[in-house]
Amino acid sequence: MSIRIILAGATGWAGSALALAIAKSNDITLVSAVSRTHAQHILGDVLNEPLLNCPVYASAQEALAHPCEVFFDFTKPDVAKSNVLAALHQGVHVVIGTSGLTDADYAEIATVAEHCRLGVLAVGNFALTVVLLQKFSEIAARYIPQWEIVDYAHDDKKDAPSGTARELAYRLSNIRPSEPTIQLAQTHGVVETRGTRVTGSQIHSIRLPGYTISVEIIFGMPDQKLIIRHDSGSSAQPYVDGALLAIRKVNTFVGLRRGLDNVLDL
Image (cartoon, rainbow, N blue to C red; front, side, top):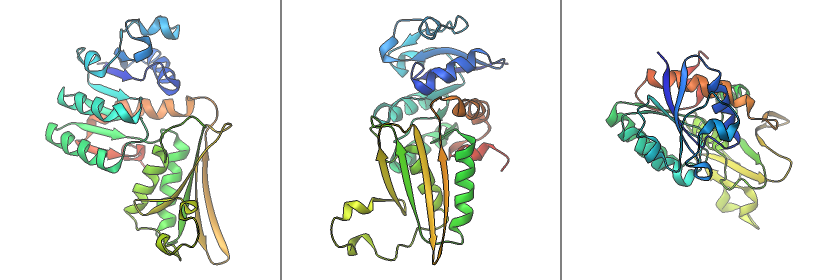
């Protein structure tokens, strides 16, 4: 039986790549889409793919009039949480690909997901190399108490830190907080140059032309350091396979899980 899905952000950079992949899938069907700039159109006309014959709506609430099993959000943080909550209240599992949601947002979403007995899989980055970066970093944090995260993105990305960096910091907080030699409050000069503290990790966000999405974590010990880095290219293809996997697996658990590795055998 095909999994019926609603895709919010279906005409964006990542969303359109996912929509085109779904068109070629044998077990996933797009029943409606959300795009404020292309509302009242057929998605296939917008993306030049005749297999995508679903309607496009301006809001998630309108799109959710179509029965589905999974709601996938690839939008912006100022609307993502309301979209997710609307889907949960409609009895629909959710995959979150939008970055910029806070830990408080996720706590609220987790409570609703548990109450509704539905699954929510939140993935800051669907690329396999990011999944491995997260796992390797968790191992390193058990042995190295000092690290900092550097988050790189294109100059017009408004949310900072990125969802990838937030998710990495959150995961490391479950191991331990980093232990800087000099605490932020003891810094002399301009304290903002030291970045910001997010769930126990120091994060620096760089926004410049020439970057797509990159993240690195630097672990430091006396006379040695370990650098683990992910760089994405110009296409959204690295995220498609992970996103399809998330759609297929989000109904296998109840509550909120953060990270694609939660549905992988790692």
